[in-house]
Image (cartoon, one colour):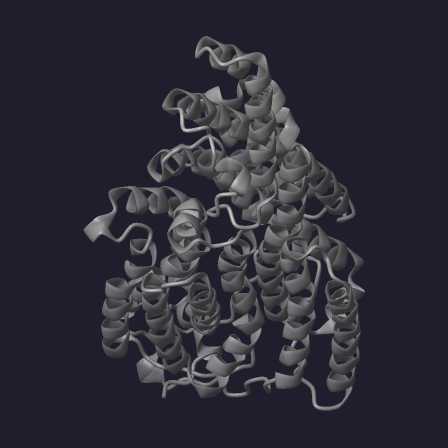
Amino acid sequence: MEPDTVPPDTVLDPRRWIAFAVVLAAGFMDLLDVTIVNVAVPSIQNDLRAEYSQIEWIIAAYVLSFAAVLITGGRLGDIYGRKRLFLIGMTGFTLASAACGIASDPSVLIGSRFVQGAMAGLMVPQILAIIRVTFPKEERTKAIAIYSGVGGSASAVGLSLGGLLVQWNLFDLGWRPIFLVNIPVGIAALIAASIVMRDSRSAHAPKLDIIGMVLAISAVVLLAYPLTEGRQKDWPAWTFIMMGAAAVAFAAFVFYERRRARTVGSPLVDLDLFRSRAFTVGLASWLLFWIGMGGFFLIWTLFMQAGLGWSPMRAGLTSAFFAVGAGIGAGTSASVLAPKLGRWVLMAGALVTGAGFGLYGWLATHYGSDFASWQMVLPLIVTGTGFGIVVAPTIDMLLGQIPEREAGAASGLLNTGQQLGIALGVALVGIIFFAQLDHDSARGVDAVAAQTRTELAATGLPGPAQDGILANFRACVQDRSAAVDPSAVPDSCRSTGGDATVAATLGAAGKEANAVNFAHTFNYTLTWGIGLMMLVCLGFAALPRDVKLEQHELPDLDDELVQV
């Protein structure tokens, strides 16, 4: 951050804690919206008749656009004023939330999520900057600690709150209140911010890098779009062409950023950061970690609701055990373990997360459709603990691998990597999960075939009729597993011969077969997650042995603030 000047009579703002409460609410809303959608996915899917790829976009659109705007949003605040950009971002976020809440089809919802994420990208970078220029040094650490704690809880609360809001079906609106709840909060925050928040800007703000931003966005979209749409379209040639174009766009981005650093200056990404081998490997490990977690949050929700048939409330409340584990892991990691053990804590956290994945997958196949909430407590606490151990200290540790003057650029890059990891995780894990669900569909039929035949025989149906019904049942399960639109009923699932008893038998068998298929697919996909966590562990092992928790001192207030 470039040094600023400050009039001596405006150093301390008597309303600074009220202003802090406003930005705290804004940060909570942003992080809440990253996770709250996950538990509502099946309800959105059923109501809007969304295809699986569209569900992936509803999740990924937010984090992609957020990541794309994040660094530029911070620079805009430095140039034009942080309060101004905060108000613009909050206004746009609130309006986009309203558009999400009234969306009538998946395309409108996806577009609104893109706008919502972009507005968050304008709003969120101002929060820490406002904290930095509002509080004196002796209060700043406390404010940042509160903000970090609230931010960590928001991600976990989102899963439980989303389930409750969908289950309560407020005003018969179904899933829509998960977005509409942002409207009154956003309006209140706007009114309060306009009254109590002071504006500030950097005296020597970095220049905007619009071309770099466009190249970076192009590279990510050219990769994410074919990964998300490829399975549905049966991988036509254009999907591979787009992925090749993504590599070209990325190469162009690197070339342009290097050239800009030599000429104009203020590149979007300071490539000199990658001269630090430890930071580079750590950033790659951080990205892989969030790819694994982004994919986990998607398939975990689908398994509980689409696989086991749980209500949103049950799924949301069960997810609270993950939050408990995350709190345990984060608390012990950041305050106790990381300052003493350094990189070994990050390595252990990745391994614990992988162990949680393995335990969860094994229990899923063991219990199948009988998997109860209490039986998920242990794997969720283990997974959440590993998650918290990694997330709490990683950014500070990696910032310790680069010079103090580059901490701001490195922090922005790490936060961007987190959002990109979530988006890529949804796309990549979605490919594995849905392909395996299709490939392994016979498993569920085989598991229920004997019992189903016995029940059909009890109705008096002759053997050849039973064979025909079971063959049609097998085709129905296969077609449903291969479907890109889960709300559509395949032709093979429409006829049961007109017998209510037979229909009831096949309905129960279909639910059981579906649960078995989802359980085994969930387990299979989590094995890939375990592999990712092993790579994350190896990456963190490349950090220096003596790396410790490194908290960069934020600049003194007197060097940071221009009141406007």
